[in-house]
Image (tube, rainbow, N blue to C red; front, side, top):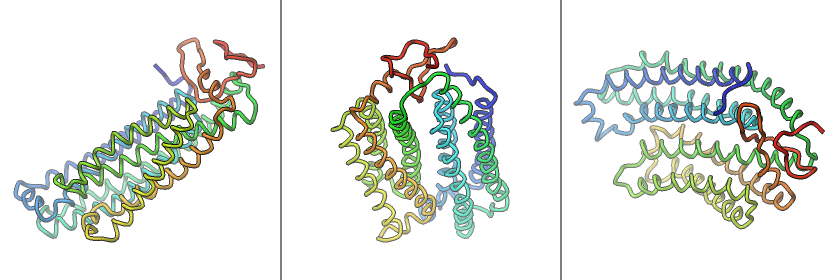
Amino acid sequence: MYKPDSVWTWAFILITFIQAAIVLAFEGYVFAIFEESLTARSRAVSATSTQAYTRTIPTFLTLFIFGLLYQLVLVWDALRMKNTIQVIGLCSYNVGLLIYAGVQIDQIKTATGMLSDTSTIPDIWDDLAPFLKAIPGVIALGLVLMTGVAWKLYDEFAWTIYKNISADLKMKRRYLTFQIYIALLKFDFFFFLGFTIQFVVVVVEVADPEFGLTLAAIPITVAILVMAGFWTRRENKWGMAFIIFLYFCAVAYFIFKLVRMYNGPKVTNYIPVRKSLTIFAVITVILIIITIINAIVCTQNFDTGLKRYIEHRKLESEDEKSYMTEMPNLSHGPAPSRMMID
């Protein structure tokens, strides 16, 4: 079990943990005020005329819970693996959370205004606004602190690499591409799931066939991402070709959803969460395109000796055996149990 072993690794974990605790506390307060304002009568009204708007706040809370907890898991994983690429990616991930926090202010204001105008709930915006506006500030502060600590971690991990690793430049570049690809798969998962949660909870009805199809896509997507990583490590070209084809299908799916949000008979269904859905869809499309490019480059790197570097990247320490995402020296054969500087 990994435990932080330096000031900067502890700092990175504590920053993300404190950020998550504060944001979730604020989101929980907003949710509690909203639920308290919904009476039995207003729930009955909302079940027919303004149902989508009553789901907006619970959906945002659910996404923030998942997003922040998932971030903590990725932080632990990045530090355990001493993966500088993933650490940098986590700072970008925080930018995404910051944008989402800003968008939710406008969407919750619209939702509470609509519900207040229809007498579904009393006017509670003044109670919610200070906490909703504070959330982007907390995340922005967390982003600044995370970026500063990430710079220190880059130096710290570079020293670890220097002590334990020696490899040719071309192989390091191939391994860097592999690292980026695996990190992209982890972030792809969050943004796809974030889009799906909003779509299922707010937009479609349970009786709609699209509801079941969208839910079925979640385990299929998880399986695709797992197999993408597996086939990359095994250097299976046919498997990678199939995965890249599915990536293009995913791009087409999200573009179709984007067009549908602004054109067609179901435009009104998307209005309560259209801004956030648009952001998630655009970010996901961009990430998938970058993933496709990296997948192609990774496939081109097959059969060049990278596979044995990946399979022999286990490093042994005094306290535990762990897997690093940095590349060991195999220039003189398989890696020994403890590697020394050449």
